[in-house]
Amino acid sequence: MKRLHGLVAAVHTPMGADGALRLEVVEKQAEHMVRNGIAAVFVGGSTGESHSLTVEERLLLAERWGNVLRGSPLRMVVHVGTNCLNDARRLAQQAVKVGAEAISALAPSYFKPKSIEVLIDCCAEIASAAPELPFYFYDIPVLTGVQFSMPAFLEQASKRIPNLVGLKFTNSDLAAYLRVLQMDDGRFDVPWGIDEHLLGALATGAQGAVGSSYNFAAPIYLRLIEAFRAGDMARAREEQMRSVQWIETLAGFGYMAAAKATMGYLGVEVGPPRLPNSKLTTQQHRELMEAIEKLSD
Image 1: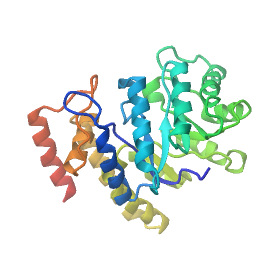
Image 2: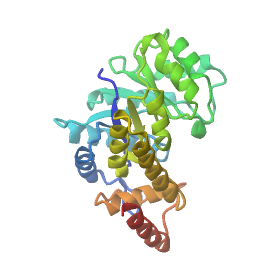
Image 3: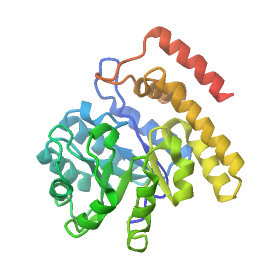
Image 4: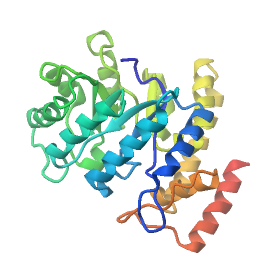
């Protein structure tokens, strides 16, 4: 598999005001991603509110993305992680059929794996359902509460999971990130997963990144990467600060709802989030639009 280099947008799941899926919006999302220099989409992840969707909805979502992307330059990774491993296996099997280039799964997070060995058992169950697809473990301890050494995980899991190719590394530990990037002469593909720390990750060796704010702020990050590669660190820091300002502003309104509303501002109506992510009030929406205008100046 071609590695996940460049920007990979963790795409939103489009919904109506009543919370129902609006799969007809996926085509507009894909067009927006291509127009903004996105290399691939990560479907059904945290940004996609996967834990707020039924399995049937997740199957429909992946199928729709697969149909829309047929013949497109955009590549697709499908997140298949869930607390139920049988559901995760079903999602992984379908990912093959809809044209995914890879699958990814985070750790079960209600009954949590108590050791790296148990986590590997879980990942092996999922990955074996789609042995022809590259598998990325999705490390995001801030949300799952599952935190193990990723260098140790890769060392052990690579002996058990033939199609393991790397990690989606949503973890601020840059020392661990450096170690996994350099393991086995750079064997593993490890796209970075914290948008507001991208510059630090690039300095550590990142070649790709998966993130939420790439949906609406990709030009900022593309300029950041360009400046970093040119050795213009002052300009790279300026662009990273712009990203921080965007993310902090949206987080002040409730990040998920604000990020989805920002997509609407850009002409891609992905609707509000589902509970437990709260919707914006009318007043919040108005204030957010004013804040976006200032950020866009």
